[in-house]
Image 1: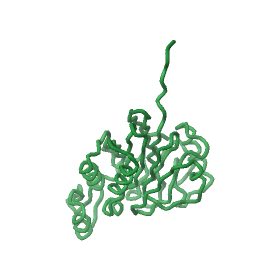
Image 2: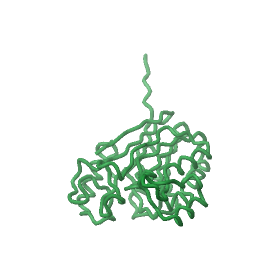
Image 3: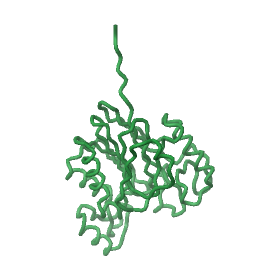
Image 4: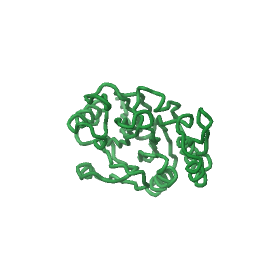
Length: 252
């Protein structure tokens, strides 16, 4: 169920987790911890997987926020818990300053980016695929965070497809590289390829974001993760970030 967890300490600690594909209720191509409702899996099984994840993370109830991702740059801001009970919202990033709300981003090769300024008490989760990265979803989210008061932003970059495996046409590589030159790469077989995660890291560095973790795991190469490039009918794993208040101990 959980692949890895990280902590970004501050006045309000930011917790980050990435799931894998094990320990859930789904079967077949979605076996077994699929968190996506849009891929053809049984909705009741997906709901059970999401409920299990919320319970493990201590975010039970309606405190795990998903969005309908469309490879764009829209940023959803959650300022009230009542917003969690609204219908599906199209966005590729989420921001909140609320404690105990898990912001989830689903991926199966795209790059999940978790952002936090724990001193200010502000977090964001970003879905950065090829299209979103090129369109600027990462700098758009950072701008929204800074407008909300963030100053010293940390990032955790989760697993995604690596440039060894992300083969594209020469035309597509040139198109993306014209926007973000760092994305241009070469596959393991010497063909044109893209390095989306590397381009995301470059965008973060240009914005003076502190990169605390940068996963080296390739989704296509790892059987523990869902990968659209490895298997087009597949599930989605997730990156989640949430805030917790630091518990202070007083002595008489």
